[in-house]
Length: 76
Image (cartoon, rainbow, N blue to C red):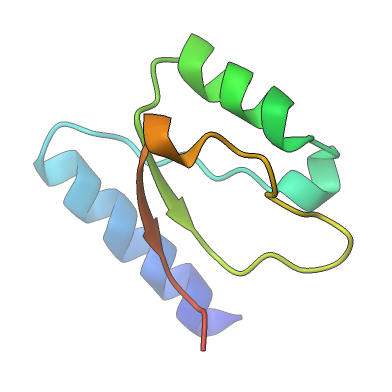
């Protein structure tokens, strides 16, 4: 979707302005369980998340939200 690509470009640019980077993970395609995702993020020193819509069979139930700064986009 063109708007999503524009959002990613803008978010990456703005993150870089503050010395951060933005990495894209597709949890449904990767088959990550919430606990595995949390372990990976912590191991990589990632403290903040920007969440897009979650579709399909993937669920973030049980994710340790209290350990991360989180923003969500694309939710109605």
